[in-house]
Length: 289
Image 1 (cartoon, helix red, strand yellow):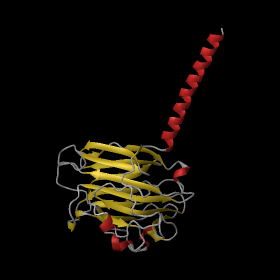
Image 2 (cartoon, one colour):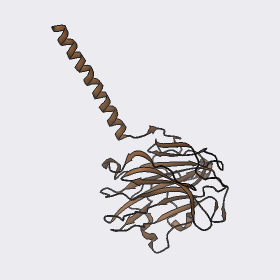
Image 3 (cartoon, helix red, strand yellow):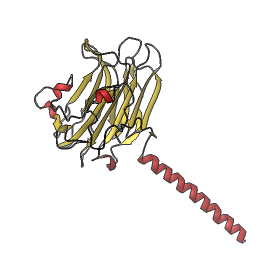
């Protein structure tokens, strides 16, 4: 009888341990979605340093770096932006910054839909030469919704191809759907299935703090399924797709890197979001230490 009781007790303890372990694994995955993949550790910059200082020599693989510390007029470093009448709520500010004094602030009034954007062109864009054609691009930025931010704006960033008539030919979009970051991809033959990241702004821990975002696109050879795209959040890989046809059967290329703040249904109140440390590169960038 005693042996039977002990066996039963150990059985239930063993099952309880397995259930507890499964719960802990679930909680861990829920808090930190994706796979740890931090990329390069940019140790050349101290915690207080400006990574865009002397970036051309320190990071020859980088194409562009803006910490908003040296130039506060967005019409200087960017090729496309809203008209000059207040930039629809977007401009450089000292209200909050990831590092240093300055960041890019996007302010929304109640009901506001279009709240600004900035574009940096590369390759052949709008029929003009903005440097060599790039078929593989990485883009990293820091982003923050202020404390108490309500709702979610649908747009955050994108890498696209635009033709001389401003038509969007194809693109990889770093967007938000029902509070969750998603990869939405437009190709010449239509939209691909949405890829979900598991990272949600419905989690209050993701509001009121700076978050490191990075995306990568690789164009396919014309007509072949060898394109790819990848998203990272705080150094964790949350989307990775390869073997896809992104550009169709043509000789068009990615040529536009954009931070955009369109809000399909409008902001529920007056509130702010911020961008900082925006880098465009031909290789993985990674987050700052």
